[in-house]
Image (cartoon, rainbow, N blue to C red; front, side, top):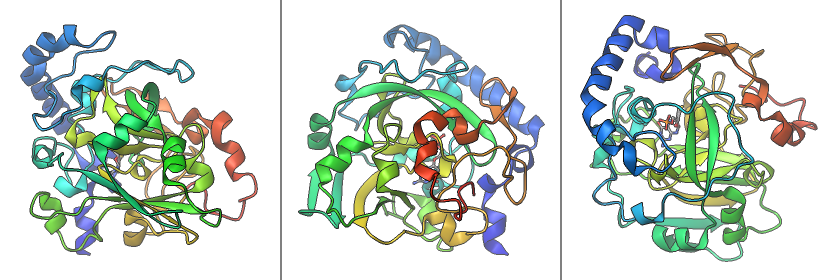
Length: 326
Ligand code: MTE
């Protein structure tokens, strides 16, 4: 089937990219970025070098960072080298390969507005810079576990999603929030691939969206988040597989109907609504027991809820009948 052959990220990395090709690409990339990385090293207080990903010329938010770190969120592993996490990305709007970071530079960051609609007290469309001024920016160290069985650990900057939900003022009857990525096939060549159900859509229950861990990302490594990682506004829900963490969001719709997300529309048996990380529930085509750590290549055991059970396990205690881990 045509669609199946196009979806590289569904394969475990070892299958999608032969490991030897992958490793030699990594060495080339490392060599290519070494000089700018060293040059940039001094400019990020307490952080690693930013690799070749300089702040985009059309991103006016550099002055907002770095922001104070929220020390409540700690890591069990080293922060991923930014030369890896900013060049090995999933952003299907710009292509189905991991190395689309150059193509993603076409993403136009301004003007950028964010719409809040559906079951809200009053629908509104807000300029992203006005929104950022109203949000309490902080930095958090989070793990990220992709459904493809690789992981990274990054310092995101941004604000609790709860602050955004409070700003939107949903009605008491709203149960879900649906998020959408921009749609512009002229700018994003992947969106010309008509067999995908664009735009990228994701959803959370309001209980999930207002959980302390749900985080709206606007920065990474003490700088604005790079285009390829989802500028100017993306989600980080680290207890769920990475496809839930939608990038470059333009709207939040509040509803009482459970949405069907992008990958669920394509293959519901493999990518469900909940998608909570669980090493004991394999993906239909591969094991989820272990994960390859980006940067080191080390294989480590995957943890239930990606290690964040103390924050989120209670959300699911009355939902045993649901496919919580697919
Ligand atoms: N959001 C959009 N709009 N388009 C995408 O293709 N890919 C998802 C998620 N958000 C994706 C997206 C997947 S599969 C993962 S693992 C993460 O983004 C990857 O985030 P990263 O590239 O910053 O590591």
